[in-house]
Image (tube, rainbow, N blue to C red):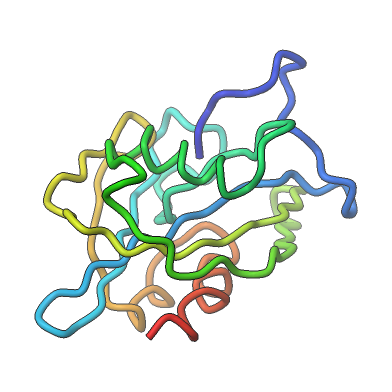
Length: 158
Protein backbone atom coordinates (compact mmCIF):
# COMPACT_ATOMS: atom_id res chain seq x y z
CA UNK A 1 0.00 0.00 0.00
CA UNK A 2 1.16 3.47 -0.68
CA UNK A 3 2.49 4.99 2.51
CA UNK A 4 1.26 8.47 1.57
CA UNK A 5 -1.27 9.58 4.15
CA UNK A 6 -3.55 12.59 4.48
CA UNK A 7 -2.26 15.56 6.44
CA UNK A 8 -4.13 14.43 9.56
CA UNK A 9 -1.65 11.56 9.87
CA UNK A 10 -4.42 8.96 9.71
CA UNK A 11 -5.61 7.04 6.64
CA UNK A 12 -9.06 8.03 5.39
CA UNK A 13 -11.92 6.27 7.17
CA UNK A 14 -14.93 4.87 5.35
CA UNK A 15 -18.36 5.26 6.85
CA UNK A 16 -18.82 1.46 6.70
CA UNK A 17 -18.06 0.29 10.25
CA UNK A 18 -15.06 2.62 10.54
CA UNK A 19 -13.17 0.69 7.86
CA UNK A 20 -10.11 2.12 6.15
CA UNK A 21 -10.68 2.14 2.40
CA UNK A 22 -8.00 0.67 0.16
CA UNK A 23 -7.69 -0.34 -3.48
CA UNK A 24 -6.03 -3.56 -4.63
CA UNK A 25 -4.97 -4.29 -8.20
CA UNK A 26 -4.36 -7.79 -9.45
CA UNK A 27 -2.18 -7.61 -12.55
CA UNK A 28 -2.72 -10.48 -14.96
CA UNK A 29 -0.39 -11.81 -17.62
CA UNK A 30 -1.27 -14.56 -20.00
CA UNK A 31 1.79 -16.71 -20.48
CA UNK A 32 1.66 -19.68 -22.84
CA UNK A 33 -2.13 -19.89 -22.49
CA UNK A 34 -1.79 -19.81 -18.71
CA UNK A 35 -2.87 -17.01 -16.39
CA UNK A 36 -0.46 -15.64 -13.82
CA UNK A 37 -1.04 -12.89 -11.26
CA UNK A 38 1.58 -10.46 -10.01
CA UNK A 39 2.02 -10.44 -6.25
CA UNK A 40 4.47 -8.24 -4.36
CA UNK A 41 6.08 -8.92 -0.99
CA UNK A 42 5.51 -5.90 1.24
CA UNK A 43 8.66 -4.24 2.50
CA UNK A 44 9.53 -3.35 6.08
CA UNK A 45 8.98 0.30 5.22
CA UNK A 46 5.17 0.06 4.89
CA UNK A 47 2.81 0.50 7.83
CA UNK A 48 1.11 -2.88 7.84
CA UNK A 49 1.68 -6.53 6.91
CA UNK A 50 5.42 -6.29 6.27
CA UNK A 51 6.78 -9.38 4.55
CA UNK A 52 3.40 -10.59 3.34
CA UNK A 53 2.34 -11.05 -0.26
CA UNK A 54 -0.24 -8.64 -1.70
CA UNK A 55 -1.58 -7.16 -4.88
CA UNK A 56 -0.59 -3.63 -5.83
CA UNK A 57 -2.50 -1.60 -3.29
CA UNK A 58 -2.91 1.69 -1.48
CA UNK A 59 -5.15 3.90 0.60
CA UNK A 60 -8.14 5.47 -1.13
CA UNK A 61 -7.44 9.19 -0.86
CA UNK A 62 -10.29 11.62 -0.08
CA UNK A 63 -12.09 12.92 -3.17
CA UNK A 64 -10.59 10.27 -5.46
CA UNK A 65 -12.56 7.43 -7.02
CA UNK A 66 -11.34 3.87 -6.41
CA UNK A 67 -10.60 3.48 -10.14
CA UNK A 68 -8.48 6.63 -10.31
CA UNK A 69 -6.65 5.62 -7.12
CA UNK A 70 -5.85 2.14 -8.40
CA UNK A 71 -4.34 3.60 -11.59
CA UNK A 72 -2.17 5.84 -9.41
CA UNK A 73 -1.02 2.92 -7.26
CA UNK A 74 -0.14 0.82 -10.31
CA UNK A 75 1.92 3.66 -11.80
CA UNK A 76 3.70 4.44 -8.52
CA UNK A 77 4.42 0.86 -7.47
CA UNK A 78 5.18 -0.79 -10.83
CA UNK A 79 6.07 2.01 -13.24
CA UNK A 80 3.28 0.85 -15.57
CA UNK A 81 1.14 3.59 -17.10
CA UNK A 82 -2.60 3.40 -17.76
CA UNK A 83 -2.05 2.82 -21.49
CA UNK A 84 -0.12 -0.40 -20.77
CA UNK A 85 -2.95 -2.13 -18.88
CA UNK A 86 -6.52 -3.10 -19.67
CA UNK A 87 -9.18 -3.13 -16.96
CA UNK A 88 -10.81 -6.57 -17.01
CA UNK A 89 -13.03 -6.32 -13.96
CA UNK A 90 -13.77 -4.24 -10.90
CA UNK A 91 -15.20 -6.21 -8.01
CA UNK A 92 -17.67 -5.30 -5.31
CA UNK A 93 -15.92 -3.75 -2.32
CA UNK A 94 -15.49 -6.15 0.57
CA UNK A 95 -14.96 -5.75 4.29
CA UNK A 96 -11.88 -7.48 5.69
CA UNK A 97 -11.56 -7.70 9.45
CA UNK A 98 -8.21 -8.35 11.08
CA UNK A 99 -9.00 -8.82 14.77
CA UNK A 100 -5.37 -9.66 15.59
CA UNK A 101 -4.32 -6.15 14.49
CA UNK A 102 -7.64 -4.46 15.43
CA UNK A 103 -8.07 -3.29 11.84
CA UNK A 104 -11.01 -3.23 9.44
CA UNK A 105 -10.49 -2.61 5.74
CA UNK A 106 -12.90 -1.87 2.91
CA UNK A 107 -11.10 -3.34 -0.08
CA UNK A 108 -11.92 -2.23 -3.65
CA UNK A 109 -10.51 -5.02 -5.87
CA UNK A 110 -9.61 -4.66 -9.56
CA UNK A 111 -8.21 -6.98 -12.23
CA UNK A 112 -6.06 -5.60 -15.05
CA UNK A 113 -4.32 -7.38 -17.90
CA UNK A 114 -0.77 -6.12 -18.44
CA UNK A 115 0.31 -5.61 -22.04
CA UNK A 116 4.06 -5.41 -21.26
CA UNK A 117 4.72 -7.33 -18.02
CA UNK A 118 8.47 -7.33 -18.65
CA UNK A 119 8.49 -3.55 -18.00
CA UNK A 120 7.24 -3.82 -14.41
CA UNK A 121 9.64 -2.43 -11.79
CA UNK A 122 8.70 -2.48 -8.11
CA UNK A 123 9.31 0.48 -5.81
CA UNK A 124 10.30 0.76 -2.13
CA UNK A 125 6.97 -0.60 -0.93
CA UNK A 126 7.92 -4.14 -2.03
CA UNK A 127 11.04 -6.24 -1.66
CA UNK A 128 10.21 -8.67 -4.46
CA UNK A 129 7.59 -9.59 -7.00
CA UNK A 130 6.36 -12.96 -8.19
CA UNK A 131 4.03 -14.17 -10.94
CA UNK A 132 1.84 -16.92 -9.52
CA UNK A 133 -0.85 -19.18 -10.88
CA UNK A 134 -4.24 -18.21 -9.41
CA UNK A 135 -4.68 -21.44 -7.39
CA UNK A 136 -1.31 -20.82 -5.69
CA UNK A 137 -2.42 -17.56 -4.04
CA UNK A 138 -4.20 -19.40 -1.23
CA UNK A 139 -0.98 -21.15 -0.22
CA UNK A 140 1.04 -17.97 0.32
CA UNK A 141 1.44 -15.83 3.43
CA UNK A 142 -0.69 -12.93 2.22
CA UNK A 143 -2.37 -9.85 3.61
CA UNK A 144 -5.77 -10.70 5.10
CA UNK A 145 -8.55 -11.32 2.58
CA UNK A 146 -6.32 -11.39 -0.51
CA UNK A 147 -7.64 -14.68 -1.92
CA UNK A 148 -11.23 -13.55 -1.38
CA UNK A 149 -10.62 -10.17 -3.03
CA UNK A 150 -8.98 -11.94 -5.98
CA UNK A 151 -11.96 -14.28 -6.32
CA UNK A 152 -14.25 -11.25 -6.66
CA UNK A 153 -12.51 -10.15 -9.83
CA UNK A 154 -11.08 -13.29 -11.37
CA UNK A 155 -14.05 -15.66 -11.57
CA UNK A 156 -15.58 -13.71 -14.47
CA UNK A 157 -12.35 -12.61 -16.16
CA UNK A 158 -11.98 -15.38 -18.70
